[in-house]
Image (cartoon, rainbow, N blue to C red; front, side, top):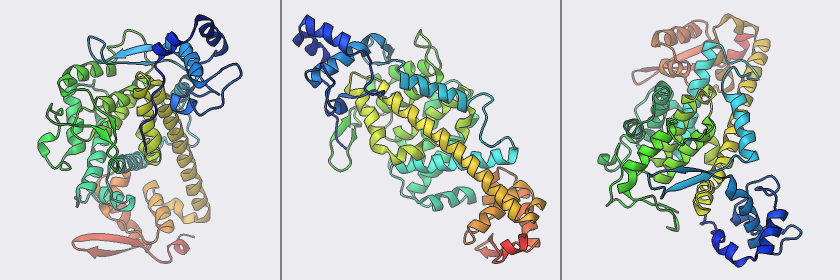
Length: 441
């Protein structure tokens, strides 16, 4: 990836354009969008010119004439030296309305997840997915199956990659517990400490702001090209104070929609980069805190990092486009709201697919009706993955139940000849019997 080309300076452009040209551009360019999209100069300069526009700089000036009057500002300091702006463009408005309808209140899922057992299972699955993918984005190399088994079996991590994933999992659990608390510097430090524990070379860097002598930049790991220089460390106290006021709806004076506020909070943590490391994971964790804090309960079951990990270039570009164009937050908002929309669709598809699979299996295997929901899910998984072992701890974690309930579920299946047990060290493991499907017919 490379740094996008900076847009032409608007003040210089207006000085170059005569009054007649400026009037023509104001009349000729009537939207902030290009073909329905909020386009950055990096992309605009490659597009075919519309009729009546002589060059791309004039086209950019025309867009700016439309965009600038609509801006609303957010400040990170009392002197307004670090200032960001956004506007409620159609793509932003449409997507936050979609999120309102599909992630909060009494929403209608394609299949109900109201059953307590199913809710617990989806919740654990989402936490694991977000913990793994968010960590992998920051360099964790542990594979998904190994990481999932570590969390479900409650095994101690073997290396920093596993520790990073386990930290993320525990942090996401913690965020759900404290979602009703206001954001504070103390809480940000606590979240950063949970995310970073036992993963830094120097543990003294955990749970505190970076210091002036600690040079932190965002750069390409291969070429060394610097993409972002965070604000000086001596500004962090003031900026985090302003950020907490923003997160807690104490500023600005005008209304900011909760979804937009949450996405901007995500951006600002990444921009401020208050820590030596762990800033990306902290930013995504605080985004989840904000969405849950504002009542978007579906985010207990949604993973945004699963999408972001596949699109790390676009994710990074949304930061760069914003900083590169006078801190215009619309680039980050448009992209991130699109990610949220796709994550909601993915959640709905998963729930629907899960329900269909369970129904089909119940119809094929009539005796499944004799078992409770947790046992049915274990059996369904065992039929599809006959080589994977189960433990009391993995079953307990998957469904958020007591150890005694987990033990009872599994031993009942052993008694019925559906699972066989064997020891690995001191722990008891269970595998499906080879003819498990026939026994259930």
